[in-house]
View 1 (cartoon, helix red, strand yellow):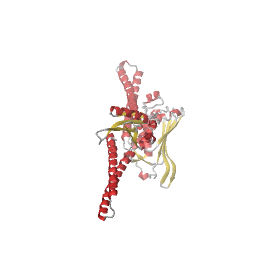
View 2: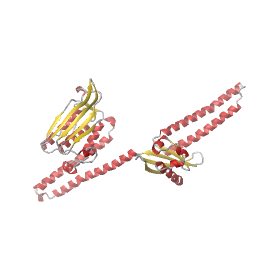
View 3: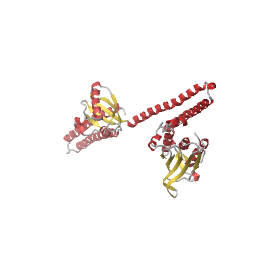
View 4: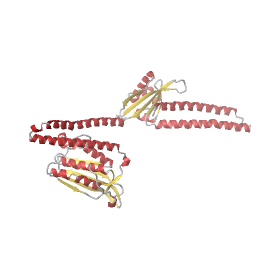
Length: 430
């Protein structure tokens, strides 16, 4: 909220309310002293004159109530301090963020105890001395980040006289957290782009001496070039998807689609990749069901889990994709029912201590293995975000050398879908 507007509203209303109330009270008392009840005409005029100041009092009270209500409902903490830095006014939000209470109005020592309020009072003296606006950030004992601004307040009616200082404090904890995550994301993306580009540049420089290279060196260089270009292409696609997800309006995620058909399509699209590693990829689907969201994104989430299972499973291994419904069902309605999509493998597995971190952006359990497979560290975080957008979550059960099982768990709508209501259109691949 604009500080000058707040100042004008508070100062102006206070002066008008006080002056209006005093004028109305004086007029009421004057009429009470001069009224002559024995004379009917005079009594009638007096009653009419008495009604006018009473109406004025009610109008002033109503206007004061409006301003007080606005003041109390403000989401920022508001403090008004006089020229001695004594607190004269505060709202409820100031109590929540700064710990201001009635005792601060009478005992200045209470206000000057260590904490955000003490810092604000200290800055108040600087604003009064310099007659300038002061802005700074604070952190309270609960770890909340506060953005504080202090502005000198001048009288609108008494020759621009300095009345005190208006302080506004806003809780910017989530904003600062988002800014920090954004900076970390940009730094990580820059690093992830730089790594494959450096390798690609080195390989291309080496290929300039193609005729002098041994056959095995040529094959190794071409294989590395293929892995790094695929990694770079994947990274670009995933960053674009993250951007799309962050800017997508929730109201637009209302496509109804057959989630089981989408999962089957996603898994079967990777049959050629499994065949190249001589793996057995099995897809077992249960009853069809409808979800509301975006089929393209859901397809990407399932495909990512299956692709990871294939990549981190050795030659001749197996990967199984299974869909099923869990929960109670009664008639045409469902209660506590969930769609379960399991992706299991007999691959290298993941240590339980890593389970929580694998869903962090750019985190990779085995960086050396990821560099060989072209992993970017964004696949699982994107898959997790997509499932969350559909109201579900991803569970993982894994241990080193024992393979992994990832489970997508999505709650179903209250009314179970019938086969006729399912959208069985072809699912676009990414």
